[in-house]
Image (cartoon, rainbow over all chains, first blue to last red; front, side, top):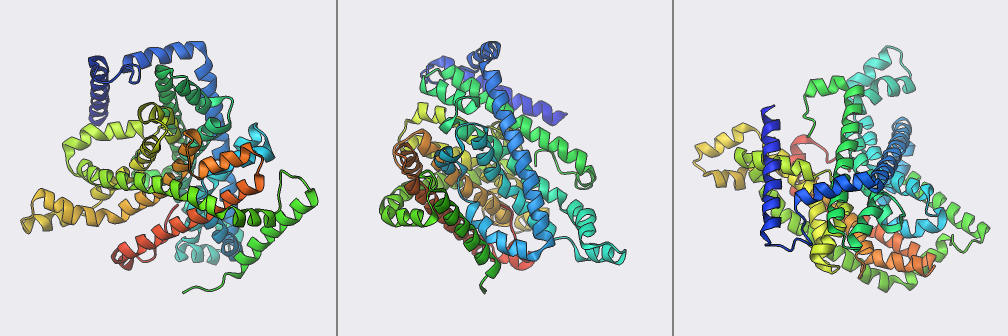
Length: 256
Length: 254
């Protein structure tokens, strides 16, 4: 509670300082709108509705993309955990494709996939897949031997051990990957919208920025920040629902 | 110790073979076979290399600035209670902003030249490094500080000679995350604030329907990304050999 108070004090102080600097005329106000003006613009833009539909479009893209990629990556990691040959064959290819910046794929992917949802689907799944897969594959491989052997002596088969022992034990680490995937999904969605989009927050930001509507640009930035907070909060809720036992055991802070 | 990984080679060849056959069967000029892409890579190697150097140069400068500023800053925030109270809420507030979203603002303040792009890269790299430094310094065992005190080190000396080295494993994880992000944002920044770099090369290939040339650029950047990643992994293992020697293994997260 006290830390919450201190936190809001610090943020309020920062905003006040920003307001004072913007009003003092030290920097050109055209480029550097005061927070109150940004707030007013944001409210007005929400009234006009464009920023709301942009927010919803971007958020849904990021959410659907990150979810699909996470499920796919966990399925692939389970296969890799069950059959060593899958992991041996796939991991080097993963190492090779993983550092490829998703934005680099956008221009050429347009030829194959057009400008619609297929493009976003491909870019987002490609971007979000790797952190989940790598964390999941590593965690599934690292189950303590004793646990696996114990399950085996109770008569569990390989698949049952995977489902009832190794996967639950790996979930905390998998969620680290899912959390990365969620923020990467938002980044990839906004980047794709900026490069090739006709709607969404990325397009809104580029449009406002290039036409020098500066308060609107900052308002879009605030909307992007809210999207980032929201998608992270969703992952944390999902994490608490699925692995509450782990959260209680380790008492990791939400912000860690 | 490296053995030939047969399954990976077989899978890789199968995938490339499938690409080649599908493209040859399709006869679609939008979908060139792999051999054509390789030929394009050979033909455009010089151009692509020059553009990638621009991309990497900006990524490296941005990363270096972020490391130089954010590691000491994070150590201060992590260790000095008062500074933590002031800055940590701000860090947590700014962190969720997706990096590409700051592009229009970077453009506004720093223009389309190197400065604007490097500013975006610094911004992107700042957060994983800063958070690594804060968490890393805080995770240190209190006994280490007590040892420093009994050796009569000053607070600054404790920070420089005990806190930072002990926090290096966690800081390095932050830096490795930042390396991938730097490359990613470097490409995005080029595409948005076009002047030069591999991002611009890819856009131009698209605009002129030179698909094989564009795919050659994608292959090149995949190779470079892999090499950069590998370099930092090796660096990490060398610098932190003492750490892995006690904990065993350098298995890391992406």
